[in-house]
Length: 506
Image (tube, rainbow, N blue to C red):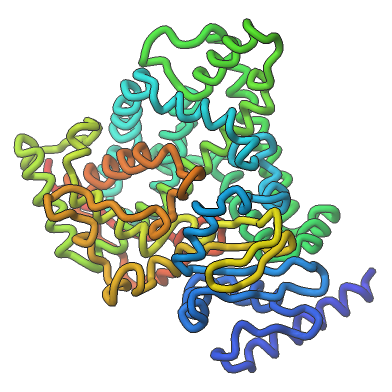
């Protein structure tokens, strides 16, 4: 065993030396036997920009050979015709695949982890929830509660003591609490002064990091790590156990306290809605899987990841972008004053949905940040049969197809020659409303049957946070920071975003 580890270490070291000595323009480097795998692993810290560069140099599509350990190759594309083909025209061919389920096995029976056919029943429940009047009533209440009791007091405290705050950690905690209340009715209280230790938050971070490396390592490698219980796979197992314990506790408490569903809109959440619908089905057909704790906990886990990581990451990139483009910040503040003239020179918490809906330029600035820094920089699909893409590339069941939304946001053929500029105006229509682009040009919320049903909620919550902070505080970005993407399944900032704040009003 020791000899094997010594040989493995030598191989890794040699790969690293060759990588360092190789001219950068020769990447992606296909190594003997190991092919692209060492390059992907060792270059993962700049994988997004490197992928965008390579796609630009290869007409938007490139085929990576993985390694002799696996016979699965990876086709990465940002070609608009390919994306339309995969996500819309031939969506029935391109599913998430068994490999996707393996990578996200910690989500178990969650709707997120299913094929399109398997997802149909759960999709009906999801859409039904978002159509509920109680959902629309409780959304502003949750937003106001989490802003008033969590985010604003923390920033007030930071302003009074002139201490540094990590915005990314702040937003992650905010979105975790807000999403947990939305999903379960319980407030985990992670967004409090001093940023208390939160097992749920730590578990999510460990799981997200491990999930990313499962994407770039050959399946047999990370499964061996899991079998040996080492490295990130060990952290994944421990974090998943923590997650399961917490969420199943939420489910048990909800089943004990409100088995018959909510009595009013102030007591409405996803978990209770699922239980209500399941009870209806059970009365008609007998035992129903939607009552099972594992099913409920799995879907809550998927909801927490979708609601926390994506919005928290985007808000961080948004504040970084407007710090680099002060004219955009000025226009947002002018819009807020125009839409809400009565709040000038006084504190205000933005939780009114109608009020937030009128903030068109703020919505556009968030969309622009999402275009340049999509929270899901890669979307994975696996064909269930042989197919030929519009680009001429042939794919089959042994090909992972990855749509690179990060590269698409920097594609001049889609967004024009100014595609690398932060320009919210591109999202404002001639009539002053939100300009809509084809979902295949802006795939961050999915496209076709895979379109995310929570898009409107996500923008409402992000606008509430952004408007509340910008109206009530001056945000000063700390100097000397290294602003680079982190290595995770979500496009986060590797080192966070350190700021100080000062109050605009007393």
